[in-house]
Length: 299
Image 1 (cartoon, rainbow, N blue to C red):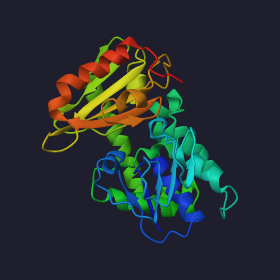
Image 2: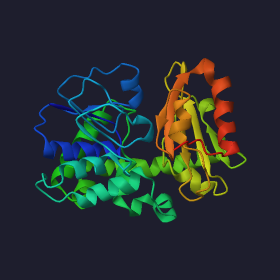
Image 3: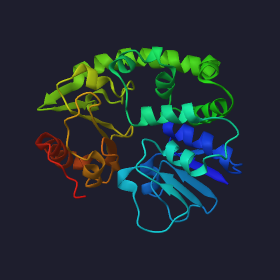
Image 4: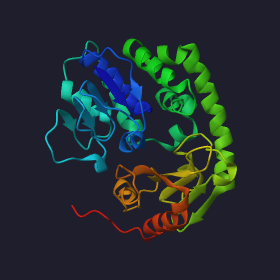
C-alpha cells in the first residue's frame, strides 16, 4: 500500500496519520494536483490519495477541497474541514498509538491560513508555522525531506523536530528567503482595486517565501494573485490566488473561479497552471472577476 499526497504541511500530516492507521509499506509519492489531473501520475488500486483530487483507481481517498467534491461512491472520506489531515484524523479516530491532536490542530491552522499578524511577520517565533515554510517541491531533495518530516513527526514533539539538523538548516534558510521575498513583493506587486497582483515573470524564476506576507504588506487589499512561470522553458504559467487572512471582504470562491481556468482549490485559496499563450486572455479575466468581487456560489 502506498500514500500519494501533496508536498505541503497538510500532506505531511496526512502521511503521518495514514502510516499510523494503515499497513503502508511503500515510500510516499509526493505530487501536485496538476500532476494527477494531467495524467502524469500512475494511480493503482493499492494507493491512498490524500489532499488531492479523486482518482477512480485509488484504494482510499481523503480530501477537503471545495472543487474536488464528487457525487459517486468511494472508500475514504471527504468533508469541508480546515485540513485534509482533519478528515483523516476524524475517520480513524482511536486507531492512533499516540496523541496527534496538537499536530492536526496546527495542520488546520496553517492550511486554513488562520494566522495572526505576529505569526506572519515573525514565523521564527512559531515553530509549526516556520516548519511549514520549509516544505516545497523545487529541489530533488524535497521529496526526501517531506518523508523525513513524516518520520520525525511520528516520533517527536515539535521541539524535537526543529532540533533535527536538516530541519534546523531549512528553517534558517526559510527565514533568509522570507527577508528576500519581502523585497521582491514590494518591487513586483501592483494594487488593482482591492487585488494585489504579484507578477514575478520578469524575474524568470519563482521567488520563495512566506505566502501570507503579501497580506501584511498590502493591508488595503482583500485578495492576492501570484503569477510566475511554471517551468524553465517558460511554456506554462502558474497562478496562485488567495483571499487575505486579515482583510476578509473578498466574496469570490477562489477554487470555483479557478476551475474555469483548469485549476481549483478552496473557497479562500487555489491555483492553476496553463499554457503561456493563454496568459493575455486568462489573467485579465481572473483579475476582473476578483475586482468585481461578486459571489460566484450558487449553493
